[in-house]
Length: 212
Image 1 (cartoon, rainbow, N blue to C red):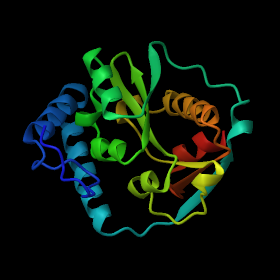
Image 2: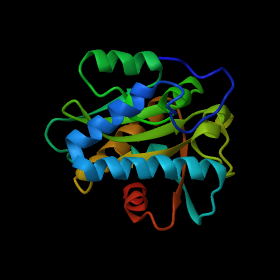
Image 3: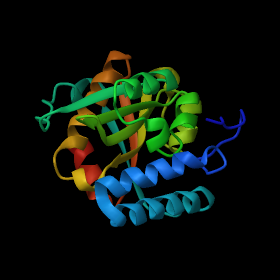
Image 4: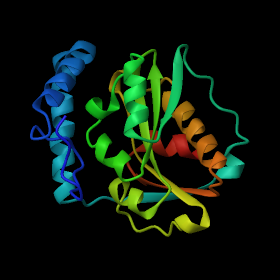
């Protein structure tokens, strides 16, 4: 894979990085979701590109007490669901060698986020990537996840999450809730006290996941 030039910031993987990444992603969507999935993925790609240039949306900012959230029982996950915390490109490649979907190819911008210190929480149904969310424990990592200027103090043990996405054909199965519970446990193990999350007001499913 041709790696992006150090210091550049991109929210998606472009064909300039490796055209095969786009082809592989399209084939994976075609296998799982048919032609509708391919068009949906293309729409998300274009939307991400546009959002990189201009964004105007109404958001709700949550600040979740991590220690209290860890006491809430996790939703029972579907059979064969596992959550893996990916802290580096090497973690992603090790999982890929074990047969799991490679998030460096399947998730736009994953490589850049990991290189900037962001941490991915990935829920896999079997070996298929079912849901992903990102966590930031530093200012640099937050810059690639969320530009909303809420008052997270990373030196005082705050954290934030953003960029959550669940595959359309796997929504409504409690996967995101179980993944988020694993994220809270991870943040608690890192000594984080508060997790901030900015969610669009019309994104009711994500709001309910955090509120629960």
